[in-house]
Image: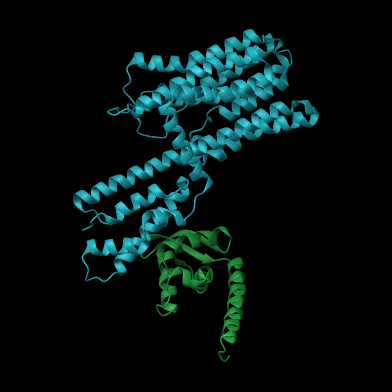
Length: 107
Length: 355
């Protein structure tokens, strides 16, 4: 699915992928792919700028760490990121219910 | 075997990226790690070259990918200083006149035409000489010579720096003759600063620099450390000495001001202190070292608000120095990153270095 089709939900997907445990950029992309059952093939070069942006906004924290014998930048969710994730998830669910209702789908 | 596609990609990506050195290094490292993961994950049935090409294609065109990271202020400043350098090379005289005219205008506003000319004319010669040197360095076939300058050329280089500075001091002194106590204090701190600078253990960050190895301070480490400490102790004792020595006429406050200038510019006496300074960002070092002088000037303004001009000049100069040194640091590290990427690209093209 192309980035345009994500409808600005890239941040929500990235925050959600990091909810369980800290991960490096490639692992985040893989996690989103796995959870979405390959529906979201994130445009790779847009993930890192988004991770940097979320870090600047204080929602993520990152540090260099040794992962599988290689030095990787590992991202983790901050408390601000957790509350932002909860808020955006709520917004998304409301949006999904609203669109579903407008399309005449049963709840 | 590597086809070098990743290295070529990183080189193009680096050229398109508008970022300061620290952020640039981090982004490049992340992108490279991502591409390595991507290659490993791509179907192992593919040849290495095909896997690399596929990984690079998935990441997107280098210019577009770099643009997505967005610019940062240091990156823009670095790019702008690169343009400025190209302009300096193309029009050395014009740029020298434009640069120095700002200093002349400022000195004119501060203390009149004679001082403005006394400061401006030697400075114009110095800036033009620097621009011409830069032009010479960009000529085809020029080879940088960090060491091995002939003794005559070295003397000429020292003269090019010191003659205009001496001219500024002499002409300013003629325009506004100072008193004996002021000259005594300035001379005292100049001697302290010269001694500490002369006895510093190295002249550049390279520990293996052959130029540094021939210096007296390196060959006689203990004696040089003694000179450095003596210089600092004498500088710190300056305000107390000024209170009792008749030639200083009890001008402890002037000596204290000179001490803060000394503390801002003189190399630190200990090797550990100098290493600490090298590890810090230039803006942090400038901010820390200019704190005493700024604090003193703030106190002066609180006591007498008419001192605001001096506070403004020192604050503006510290801000300029911090910005200029930060840009220079970022540019030199950026050049180093580019050289490294170039070398790795050539290595990959020649012998198939691992990705």
